[in-house]
Length: 274
Image 1 (cartoon, rainbow, N blue to C red):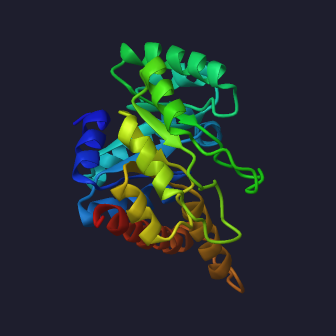
Image 2 (tube, rainbow, N blue to C red):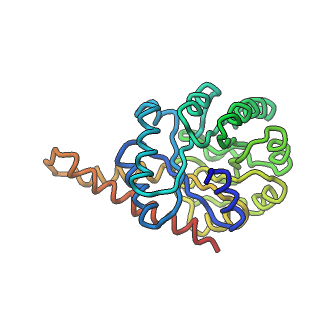
């Protein structure tokens, strides 16, 4: 099933679809083992930095083969694409879905670049995600707020023809200094008049009850990245304290297993929406 159809299905069912970033073989296997054990679909996400680190063709091949080996229904998605050129490379490499992030541009420039990506993706049958509003990126202030406005969201989707829209309702990328409080009434207003699939970025650290509340009000795609990197590295740091082991094949699997536990918990949250 195409990702667009799966997102529409899950939106209608009032449940979420988890989108997890991966950074190497271990993080890939960690998230896929969780999806396989629970028989849940999963979106595998790659950012520019992960593509630069692993190589575009290598990363895509790893994702495709991993989904086949683990028996997981899934899709490969470009997360936070910063240019039309990067999007084009990912379309050529066979991505199922691409995101063009023009959220820091003016509304008009965001519309312009998103329309260009939608046009290019059409011939590939690829799904397109965009972002509207201010969702703080790593290193950016969490104090600034630029919530997505319902009428702007409606106009943006109508003008661009985009399939999915990441909305700013109180989340941020990275870890939170205090518990986020999602603007759920605003989300409901956006959902009522916006036909695109709604996406929640900055899912790491958001309490499960708030995630479920957001899903019940229209969010479908839920992104998870920071917690995956964190649990992997924190586990390795603990394992390597006073440890003379040099065989990474003995050390890495324990950190990979912690990713699987983490993602299983997130999958239970997004699929069991109340």
